[in-house]
Image (cartoon, rainbow, N blue to C red; front, side):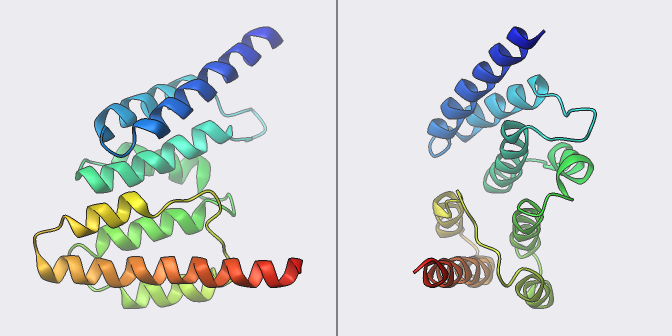
Amino acid sequence: SYEDDIFQKEITDALFLKSFLLMGDYSQESMEIFDEIIDRCKVAEDGTVPRNFEYSVINNIELALITNDDDTKYRDLADTYLYDLEDTRPQLEMLTILKNAQELNQDEAMQRWREEYKDYYFKNWSFEELKKWNSRMEDADRRDRISRYLNDFIKHNNTTSIKKEDIKG
């Protein structure tokens, strides 16, 4: 019923806020709450994806990267429901680049990302958890490689943000 749908949305909104507040020091608990949101949310028959579902899947991909957990379940959900969303694909590809950069140079993937998403702005995105994760890395080569790409994304976002401000002004 309509009332049940509204109640479910209020629950997922509250869970989302709680998980977001826990993210820094309580990554595992945060992931569990995002999992509950993912389980509660239903993608509409017309393919409309609830925002809390979208954010929960992306946040769990990021948290899986940070905690070195398996992200297969979340990647599969993203491939099925989120990949065609224009504001989600650049985020997913960024997280893929950072994940792959743990082992390999990602210069070509980074160049493709820059070309394809040159006007993309990471709205409602914080790089803080990724920066903390990167700074805690013990392997210097890995840390430096990821730091380079992470800084590229941050610089891109700052530049895009400035461009968007110029357009408004």
